[in-house]
Length: 115
Image (cartoon, rainbow, N blue to C red; front, side, top):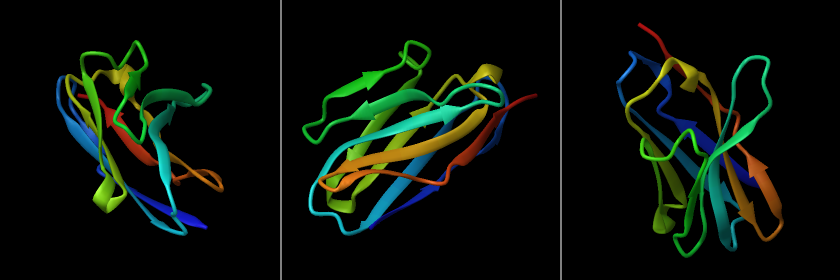
């Protein structure tokens, strides 16, 4: 089993920044891709950003230029730096990791962008 602990969510004003963290622990033999997804009320879960084991990244169009994903392989941790936040970024953000035994999800952290 793999456990994921997310942190860093909260309430922020439009234009503000947040940094999400997700630490993986447990039966990790090899971490492949790590990523962040989000789900707003009434909407489907969508990819925000992901990063591979060699550092290749991909972003949703809505995140490009504002969000940056990074990872610390030594700590099995993935980060999402979110800048210039907009009200439409409000959602529950989920961390996901792909290991040799499958894909694991965190419980999510709420991000609310509001004045």
